[in-house]
Length: 272
Image 1 (tube, rainbow, N blue to C red):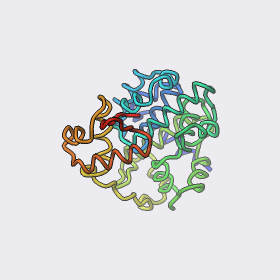
Image 2: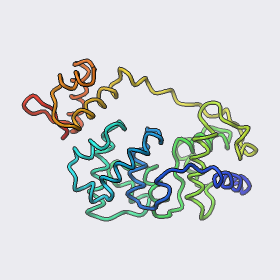
Image 3: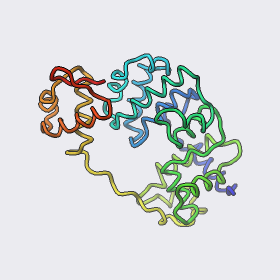
């Protein structure tokens, strides 16, 4: 059961300190879906300019669906995890053909849309009263509960905490609290508006940091997509342009070819 005083304190804090993020001012399901897919495993500060450019080029699902997949992947270049762009393109095609599902269950059936993204679009675009459980929720609610929460237990706790009729603000308040104060390491408990209702701020164990980008497969894959978004190129051309070893580029090309993102013809590679 939600603690009324904690909810009021959290929403009051959110009203004064909410992050000014472009897609929060719209209820357009396409704009929200694009933002949520982009924000998967990517910092919001990197997403904002990409989201603006992407929405300018593809303002509706129909615009995205009508474009070649290569054009969508090219616009995505720089965000990484480019299979997200492929699935977003497929989702745009599905929505264009069949219309928007308006529930979490219906949205989760779209290509590349997982439980969190489905809940976020259902809540922020269609008003469904459902928690948008992400990594911030796991951290914040675990600390409130004084025990590590995950899976069904985490979702049930979020559902119980969700105040009636205030899902949009409460979901975003929890996310903002987790992003700004209730951080993975060294949370700012002294300025947290709900510290009085927190059972144990030490209960959360941060995940291991992601491996360094320089020298990684992600770096090589990103280089390939970046070069091919400007036109066809050979592996040697990509290697020279990006100053990355030829062997790493060829390995990245092989993986991207297996995923259907690039194609080889007459010695040159192109985005599929």
